[in-house]
Amino acid sequence: MLLACAASCGAFAVTRSAPTLHHAAPRVPAFAAPAMQLPTEPKAAETNAEATDGSAGLRQILGLKGAAAGDMSAPLNWKIRLQLTKPATWVPLIWGVACGAAASGNYHAVWNMFGDAPYGTWGDVGVDTIKAICAMFLAGPLMCGFTQTINDWYDRELDAVNEPYRPIPSGAISEGEVIFQAWFLVLSSYAVAFGLDNWAGNDWPVITAVAVFGSFMAYIYSAPPLKLKQNGWQGTYALGSSYIALPWWCGHAMFNAGSLGPQEIILTVLYSIAGLGIAIVNDFKSIEGDSKMGMQSLPVAFGVDTAKWICVASIDVTQLAVAAYLYAIGETTFAYVLTGLVLPQMFSQITFLQDPVANDVKYQAAAQPFLVFGILTTALAVGHHTF
Image (cartoon, rainbow, N blue to C red):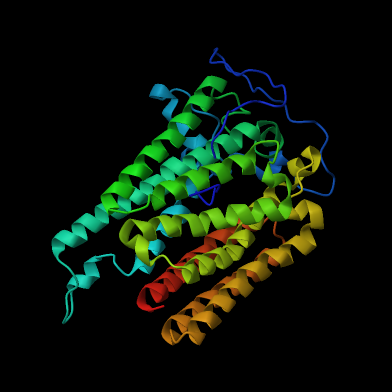
């Protein structure tokens, strides 16, 4: 349910020596960003400056760029703890669960109660809504929160360059708090997943297996010795698949695990190539630090000009291929709708391609709503089709 669930648990051993963070007042940054900057790339001080439009406080809580300096006055340091989990990144996983529920063909939605042939009862609608919310809580705050926490822990030196406002490099949270939070989130995830399997009546603990696999992927994505994110292709695809495939499987298994077949698994894994493209969008803001720390993200490995075309091609070609597949299996209406949702994304890419570093956030805000509704369209087609 990530790594991005896409995307893990083990001992939180530190392989590189680093100063221990304390709660002493006043707190000071534990890591100083190197003074040297790459002359051809934007400086972190410029790309991560605090927003001046009054949104800096909200950006801090959501874990976005332009965040205010760490506010450590809240009880139990909850604002910093929440920032560490990057709530803004929960949305794709929550949406993925919703898509999986739709693809199951067994989710009782409010609109099913209207028309000539009502589907289920109002009681079914209420129970399924609660089930979906619980699965979304597992995928978003718990699994994605765990992923972001350990990712920040193992990237604390890198973030000192790319995103020095983040909780760990800014000194806003201690080492002990970070490690406790990571363990609490992953163990809570396993407990909730096991409870959901029992609630769903699954003969085999599918949701628990997805949670364990997702946490494992998250760990090897962020932590040495594998640290998949150091390899542009492996890390980026692992991230994209964890945002799309894993929460989808979780949502489907919550409502009809027995109908989760190989066609759907293959479709979601392939659809994750579009997630790879979205992950590349996020890499453009980190070129400076990635280069200095030896991280082979695609913009670093191939350069900005090549990486931006890989990015948009993976997003567009994947969705158009899925639309062609839906058309081929007879779900023509869904195929046309999906194609229509790809076109606005391609229009938004015109500006993005001109300057992907400056326009990454703008592109995501304009294009991603159409991407996520395209994923839902695909899920509805799967739920409607008899394989």
